[in-house]
Length: 485
Ligand code: NAI
Image (cartoon, rainbow, N blue to C red; front, top):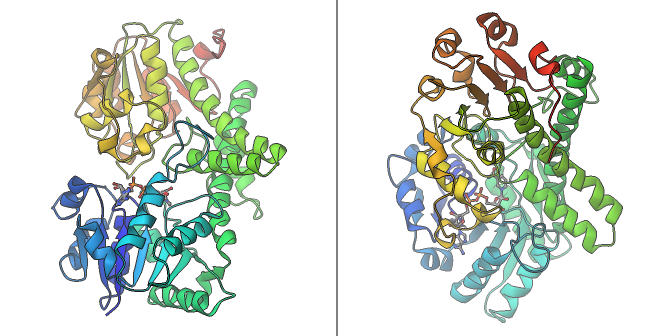
């Protein structure tokens, strides 16, 4: 029986391995992690991550051919295929700080594989890594285990999107396998991994290519996706200035079959653990390869995203008489998108920081994010979030007295001067806004950073409404906007 081990039981390692176990009952799958609490959670009734449909998949094979363990070394030692799905954060210090990928966790995993292996292995890069990482990993493995065992390195980047991970894994647009197709061992390794996916993925959706193309394809895909969001967000600023409606513009543009309708929703900005990190990494690779113009082109995608978040805060503050000091502001949604509890790089962090800087009192509600997580996020330094949590010092935020956490959207808005929607949770579309309005201070402001509410209906109730990229409320239009800091 083939044994697969995955190092890293996170948002990628957990669901990906659960799907392999689910689709391949004859393969033993063990997911290992240095975080004992994460492993305990995977073995409990409350999984460490929220993903629609994931509970059922895990429950159907956990304890049968799917196992979660913190005994990392012993499971790696005798596996045939080792996936590495550890964090690849942005470096916070040293050369390339703020841009380059920090491969500390990847390298230590590779050294451990070399140390403990008792058989030949296929080592699969699942993490998103800089181009040529496979080559570096190959050197670490072969130099630390000289002549004893054969290691074949494959790149198999993951394209799942949080919130739809189970559906994406069950029916992927494509599976990429990069390897050394020019060697006998490389070809065999590619075929072995392909055979795993071929149990449920159509043959023509499994693409094989060289290692570097596969590594770069992942960075390129994320860069292009994020670029679409920044493009429509840039357009949303122009729509507001011109009195156009970004939803109508995006709809018209998306009807062009060369462009297509997906990923054209204007918002307060993209978040998540990948887009910013991967683009910064791409920028760094371009700079290191003497391509400053290309680097600057991609840098703009992140800059527009930061601009969009700052612009949102500016709209809130300038609409409310240029001060939110001491005013209660309800934050509806803290996760970086709906259907996930993930808050990594969520736009909510930057927006909350902006409002806290202006001395607002925040009352935050999110259906999936715990109070502990919110407070931790607001207290953490930039990029620290992507390091294993036990390595990150936690300090109480200076603004902790300005933050309260509410149990629902009504409680959050009670007594508030404004509501800011920062995550597009479906429940925010169905709230009783008349009731919310009645419980708020007047004038009652509503800032929709995700275009989830019916603007006209809210204006009829009496709210002063701002919705990203939509024609401005006369109240807001007539106010001078404070300059962006
Ligand atoms: P994560 O932070 O949720 O999980 C990584 C896990 O690796 C953590 O639980 C950590 O404790 C563990 N770990 C770190 N070093 C270890 C070691 N030496 N031994 C054992 N365990 C170790 O990260 P996530 O989101 O799963 O991402 C992993 C990789 O996949 C990253 O490179 C990311 O860019 C990439 N990716 C993430 C996607 C996402 O939607 N989250 C989608 C596609 C790729």
